[in-house]
Image (cartoon, rainbow, N blue to C red; front, side, top):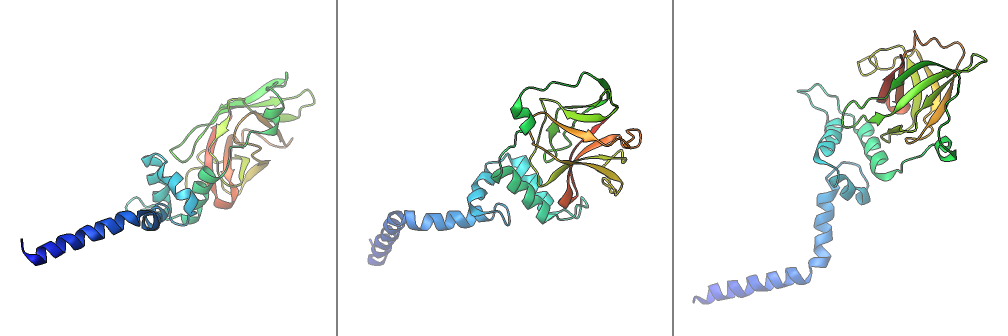
Length: 221
């Protein structure tokens, strides 16, 4: 066997032995660099959790982040990062009303009702919603015990007159804010102002105010 070939084999074996021996030192560096690229801007400790999401959700978040000229989707890096962080780093919030006990619907008249719908992989909510009118003619909007929605930043409960808040007009400027969402799980209630006409504002929206982002809608009939 040629001496140079023998030296090459010995050197190669030495490199392999050194690589194995120092594995605990160099692997985290390489692994961290790989993980850090999974979602731009996301904290290192959350990158592994992002990679654990179903592939369709990873793709949806990345598509929102990067946009797509062919699909005419504008990049939304701030919104996508906020949604990823809410999903991975925040906890579900059970409304205080739900924690206090089971739902006891008012015995007064039901004037409207509807059901939240899930629009796509990133816009998810479910549960029934009912508007009751009390004997003093005041009205209260109640989410059912089965209500739950995805986590998103600063979600408010609003009424809009746009029949399709997902279009370019969104919720518009003419909407009624019933207040911040009290929890993304469990029953909860919201007082409805006396002057609200449901014929004019028939669409209930879970709406992330700072990002102009619709989480879910329910048509009140």
